Amino acid sequence: MYKTVSENKMFQIKKFISVSFLTVVFMALSLFSVTDTAAYKNQSLPSLAGLVKKVSPSVVNISTETIIKTRTRTQMPGIPGGPDDFFRRFFDFPPGFRSPSPRTQSRKRRSAGTGFVIDSSGLILTNYHVIMTGNNKTADKITVKFKEGSKGRKAKLIGKDKETDLALLQIEKKSGDFFQAVKFGNSDSLLVGDWVVAIGNPFGLGHTVTAGIVSGKGRIGRGRYLDLIQTDASINPGNSGGPLFNLNGEVVGINQSIYTKSGGNMGIGFAIPINTAEKIIPQIKRGGKVSRGFLGVSIQPITEIIGKSLGLKNTTGALVSNLTTDGPAFKAGIKRGDIIIGLNLKTIKNPRDLMLAAADLKPGSRATVHIIRNKRKISVMLTVGQRPSSKQVAKAFSKKQISKRLGIEGQNLNAALAKKLRTRRKNGVVILKVLQNSPAAFAGLKRGDIIFEANRMQVKNMLDLEKALKSAKSGFLLLLERDGSPFYIGIQ
Image (tube, one colour):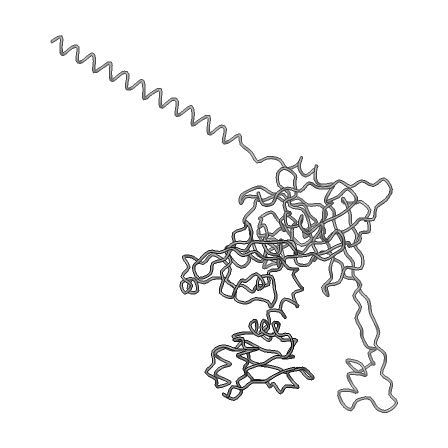
């Protein structure tokens, strides 16, 4: 009996302890929940008023004015279109009739944008397209205002770069002037989801503040050498050229463009990274052209099919499809079919990565190109060239390459040309044009001839031909095929 009573008491004690413990745990969890909920309710977004007050004096509204001239002809009463239109339509002007001279009419085209001070001397950074007209000329008059109601000041363009859509203006300075400049942040450290603030002049309304987050990075837009920041902070017509701030009040971007179907903001805006601008500003500040690195390679993406055929494990890199004769890559020994996977310390994932990385290199500097050739990784050193103009680049990579020493325009033999010329050859250079009064013309070379040997060296393409010709000290000995028959031609 005592044993039973003792067991019952022990059971009651254990039950009491268990219930008490669960009660304490429940109360603790409830208290934590209440505290956590209260803390959540007390949380609020930070006010941007202090930031805006601090940086607004550095932001300016930019207005431009351009004179557009049009020519019109005097109208003859009763004849639509005037006498020129009437008489030319039927029987031209009769003898002795003098056509009324055209009149020139002028009208003003105005536009608005935004900019911001980057130097206390009154240097302003904005977009190239803000101060340029439709025919790619600078606006006739540029005026800046620091705040609503203030008097406008004249500004002049001192430097620009179309490729990155950037322009520098200098304000007309008066004695005792001091301009508050912005501070630059680090756009590379921006993360998707970070808060940003845009200040601009949308629709000509004056200083307007909008806020949002970084929606994406590395977006392709207006500008060849740009990886843009995407943001949902409202950017509308007139915001172009304005600053994009982080919450520390530092400029991390220059508002540039929007994606829209209506002309207004749809929540997708783009800004130029300030780190990109920092590289360009010192060059355009001097009024000169921007120097960009040049490797002399034509590249293309690697598709899955190409990757498999080359024995690659993935499609990372840029495939070399062509090289400029005597370009930096050609001189360094890079070949068609090589896959560029790195440039100095930068990993190259696609052709755009290589284009941006090469452009940042200083002409004349040395660079290491990491490539894959025949499934092997190798590194090649080269001297970076000066990037020529777009037209010169296009000409350098044109299919119709020219041999200046011979005076011919030629193209590498391909399957389509071989079929047209009825040849069994798979390699060589097809002559497309023989220049007048050139060594080739005097020697009797003709359109359609196939050069497959030069100075005892095999010629598979234009690069082989140029290399063989450069090694010659005096004359040239070419082995050609014409109408299916091979023969030699000597050129003095």
